[in-house]
Length: 282
Ligand SMILES: C[S@@+](CC[C@H](N)C(=O)[O-])C[C@H]1O[C@@H](n2cnc3c(N)ncnc32)[C@H](O)[C@@H]1O
Image 1 (tube, protein in one colour):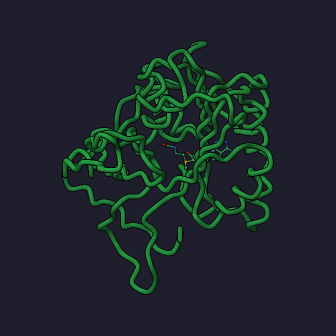
Image 2: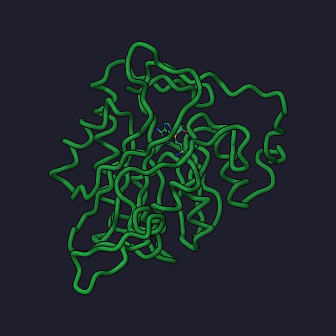
């Protein structure tokens, strides 16, 4: 296992289970975990598919337990997986930690569409806290427009005296953010890169400046990138060399890796978006 960066911004190149074991217990303010979903994605040549669902879940239960152990008493944990496995995560976690919200990250899709069933347009996220009476939630930092109040200028006559409806609110549990597409500025060469906007909301809501944010499956290092932008410390763990290079560059920690100069992959104007995969996440 190799480590890069500084005390503030750390990248660990290695297996999540092993790397998590090396993190001090009760030391992390916020963990965002976006593991392989066991749906056959290709992560730099490593296919995300376990021999059986049971083996996948057995592995997940190990790192889920470790994440809980590493969280501070007032820490928060956000975890994603495919829609078909999230019910198992939910059942496993609910008597070990407090599940505060079951979030649907919704996106529109105009690529190849399912024709014989209802295609998946969302990914589930659990928001959990260790202590439901003491946890960080910066509601003021993540307010969104309350459409009824802001656009229709309605008056709430139940109040005495009647008052205009609020123009801002804390987002509900359906979050609409576009997926990262090839032509977007933030695009990196990773098959399941999460949008900056998604991590921005999570990190602003559930941590404060100077807090430690950890991502055990960093991929394109969106979590660490946003954490740094927002003045948080971060630990990003990732198994694949290819993605470590993205992390080192995105976090500004190195300009070369094993003699290779790190730069963004040149985008070709004629690039075709990969066809969206059918039947994998339903
Ligand atoms: C769903 S992706 C994470 C995407 C990331 N959230 C982003 O925004 O780019 C899962 C990542 O976990 C990595 N991975 C798979 N098995 C791992 C393991 N045992 N330890 C650490 N990382 C692993 C994969 O290489 C992949 O990049």
